[in-house]
Image (cartoon, rainbow, N blue to C red; front, side):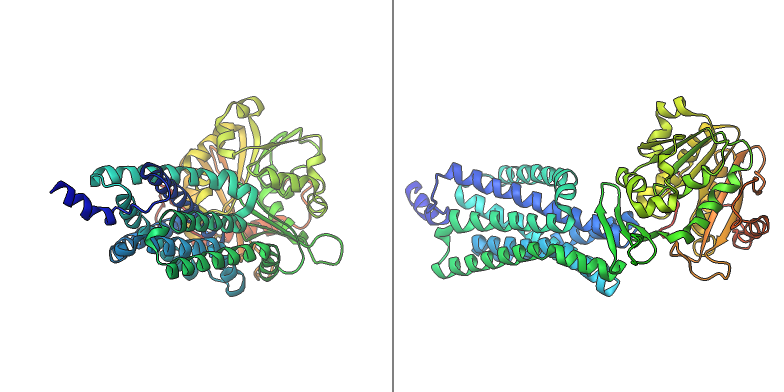
Amino acid sequence: MIDQRHRNEAPRLGLRLPVPAAAARALVLAAVFVCAACGLVYELELVALASYLVGDSVTQASVILSVMVFAMGCGSLLAKRLRGRAAAAFAAVETGLALVGGLSVMVLYGFFAWFGQATAAMVGCAFAIGVLTGAEVPLLMTLVQRIRQQDAGGAVADLFAADYVGALVGGLAFPFLLLPHFGQLTGALATGVVNAAAGGATVLWLFRGDLSRRARGWLLVANVLVLAVLAGAGAAAGPFERAARHAVYGGDVRVAEQTSVQEIVLTGGDGAGGGPLRLYLDGRLRVSGSATARYAQALVHPAMNGPHARVLVLGGGDGLALREVLRYKDVAALTAVQPDGELLRLGRTDPGLRALNGDAYADPRVRAVTADPFDWLRGPHREAAGPYDVIVADLADPGISRSAKLYSQEFYGLAARALAPGGRLAVRAGTAAGAARTFWTIDATVRAVGLQTSPYWLPATPSGAAGPAGSPDQAYLLAARGAAPPLALPPGTPPTLTPPALRLAARAPLPTRPSRSLPPSTLLRPRIPAS
């Protein structure tokens, strides 16, 4: 009986392996490790790119993860029908996954650049990658059991251990290796090459005995074609990025960098007839030539009405807010805290930005710091440098999920602690007309830390037309302890911002005030709606 049982199992156990069973099993687990790492990189690429292109990273991450997990379940069910040809099916799955995952960033960015919308492509890529990823584990389970039979619990434990460790490596490789050194597009293509090579090598060498000569030929051709497509896409990555940027930003892009914080794009402003300088942060127009100075003036000058010897600027790496502060000769010290060191470098060195900000960073009164504003306010640096007569919060737009903590009750509480007696806090708070709920939620959050606010609103242009910030208006809050600070201008304010204009700005947001008080936004309950 025993001999007969072994004879019946011999073909099913796949004894035609080029290496001993223990080594073959280790190689399959290594393939699990590599494929899991690649799968998580694809997932993170989609989440990161979707947050850049669409905004609101919490919503985009939730959609992508939900779709992918659902699709993985679908892929696992579909794999049940393929277990009879597990080796060929696994090779086909990895070939398809390498192609779809490797090209996903190029596809999404192409849809965004030329069609203006990437949501449908994002969901489609997430579903396709999820189906293919979900099919991996059942097929790999079958291949492991063909090498050496073991109890199902032990096989599952081994597979998931390799899978989770691979996911850890992929998750760490994306932010620390692929994104900073390769960028999103080339990083995804490189991941696809690794994925295709690992899947193809595992099947075409280790399990070649399970495949007919015809099947081996087809799989080899498919792998070579996928590798060729990925290599061709890699060779075309530079021209593709330039063409896509031309479609999105116009033809005079001078700087395009993806930092650990955001995507920075500078166009024009080079003095060669390329048009006014424009600065885009994560695809949002932040600076548009000298017209943008009006927004910086509206943010800074009302806050300077009072003592202003010591000033703290949070954000504002373009240097426009610094320029307005430095117009006052009695400013003794200005500390600028910018979370993105690359944007800070551009504000110091780029000729176009230096012309706009008046070379503010070269002023000896300025001390520039690269740090997260929230962490900096919590740390010992604030105690050593403060207290401040004026704090200017010129931060990323509200509604971007990663900026939510910079519009939280905890953040404004830290800012209030850094204020000197009689000090003022100025906040750039999105729009009053286009996103009234966001504006008044920020107002409620500032008031929740014991500061009284004076809201005001500045149209993009005197006629109310859409302006350089990419929205029809810009809203601000001026806050102080005790009583709401008066909205007035100190002597020396540039003539582009006049007392009548400021009085008009103070009346503008009142019709949009909600009838009931809104709750504040906190770290645990962020209430800033998506922009």
